[in-house]
Amino acid sequence: MTQHTSGSGKMVLVLTLITALSGAILAAWDSYTAPKITYHREQALLVAISQVLPAHDSTRTVVLNGQTFYEAFAGDSLVGVGFQALGNGFQGQIRMMLGMTPDLETITGLEILEQVETPGLGTKIAHDPSQRSDPEWFTKQFNGLLPSPELTVIKNATPTHSNEIQAITGATISSQAVVRILNQQIESARQAFRTGSEVVHG
Image (cartoon, rainbow, N blue to C red; front, top):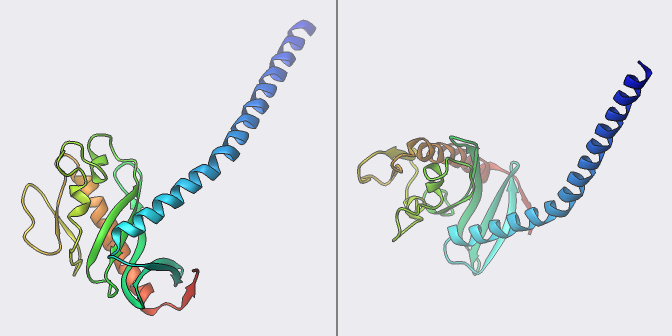
């Protein structure tokens, strides 16, 4: 009985040591990778801001009613406003950068920052390898759209109205998720941008 108890005690000790060592390794790895992930996210954000907004020579970040906006200026003139749009897709969260005209009435560009949609289907919202001539055709559809009263999705047809986009074949749910997120976020952004008190971050 004593021998059995001793063996069990050793097993518990070994498992405890393994758990502690694994935790230490994971913590060290996280402390090493977290800054790199944050840096790359920040760089991707800066690139996306420049891509979705009209030509400009300076930007500034402002927070209005708790929402962050990226204002683009050509000289002293405000030429565009960007903001992030975040919401649930088919598999998980989709994070986007949206650019609009200063009155927030016309879309100037859209970039998918992060997504975890179904590989080969939903992932086409960001990059569609089946469309070799224009893999970013889905997001490019949003350039110049007027989201009033709201954006809509159509299937198996060419859009004929200024608020319509064509769904990706086989990924209608992901296509609709992008539009749903944008409709929600645009309305929220309009209220914040037009009525919020400003806090400038640079």
